[in-house]
Image 1: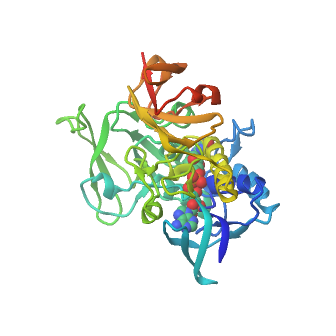
Image 2 (image 1 turned 120 degrees about the horizontal axis):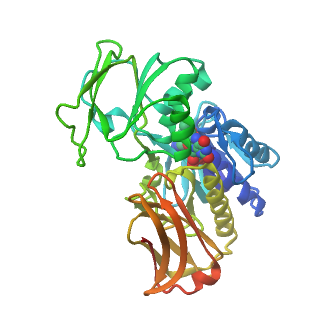
Image 3 (image 1 turned 120 degrees about the vertical axis):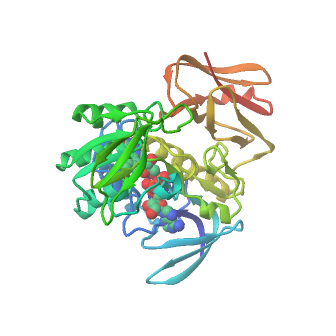
Length: 415
Ligand SMILES: Cc1cc2nc3c(=O)[nH]c(=O)nc-3n(C[C@H](O)[C@H](O)[C@H](O)COP(=O)(O)OP(=O)(O)OC[C@H]3O[C@@H](n4cnc5c(N)ncnc54)[C@H](O)[C@@H]3O)c2cc1C
């Protein structure tokens, strides 16, 4: 099967990318999704908080996804559900499998990677103790409660204060469970301030910063955990241990971009984001392979995912029609003071429109300036009252500002 554009993943990123490529005139587009329905993680996110920027409304996850699904249904974009992509290569050959067609092979002119991310598990953070049932990642517990109608437990301890964990603290409480507390190893919450307020403080659920679980006890089912305070090196402090009886442990200890397929195609991965290195069109290091959404870096807000996916879709359409002229050597975007990462990492086009850069800081700082400079010359500056690692910072550089860049754009956060 030969296709102009194949989109891998039918979550918000894949849907928005497919639609924008279609609107740019590429009608031969296929979305491949392994689940039985479109929408990615959104069908299980029944709380509101989606779409504030794009639609100016606070939508639930399913409502937000439905707007894009309706958009796709009005086009002749071909959707293959229950279909798992097993392999891609740098020649843009795709191998997938589903129960109806068996093994499927496709050759695409362009591929858009939109596989999202997955949750870190107990095995990745090495919590000592027994291995009873009753330990779930927050996303799995969310799926059980919101989609399968199953209640995972009654007395819950949550490890990690990522957004999914915070949302699940509220969800368990609303469903009648007792959430003893949320324990976070860092000195600051891992999730958005709005979720700390709306999901913990509004429900009197305690957040214990600089704490972790040092033991899980239970024969068949979890019977309790031991928590302890940690020092600045994250080592448990002797004498601060506390045993908490509970039947359920929920882990919200980070998300990892899902890049096994990207690696098979030898796409360059940025060790800071764990996602592909992309340019301003969301094109990876392999020409014609684009990426967007949580597969590139973990986003806080779905609106930003849709925005970047729109760019990827347009970029892929221009690639297929051969409209884009590239620089021989791309401009490198480098991370300066208090910058953990910046996306996009390069600027590859000869003629560049305005570009939105997404960055995360390493530590909390107040009253700072986000500065973009090239060859020692400041070309962009934006004041921020406060910057925090969990809250992504967005900066827009105009095509005029970008024209002043020579070979490198340095982005830093200065006092
Ligand atoms: C619990 C939770 C709560 C959230 N709350 C909010 C909120 O309140 N407000 C907000 O704005 N954002 C929120 N977000 C963030 C937002 O949902 C994500 O940023 C967004 O869903 C990412 O979109 P995506 O398309 O990149 O990934 P996903 O939604 O994860 O979609 C990826 C898709 O790719 C498919 N896929 C993966 N690999 C393959 C393969 N090999 N073959 C075929 N298909 C594949 C998956 O099945 C999935 O459908 C929340 C996220 C979570 C997890």
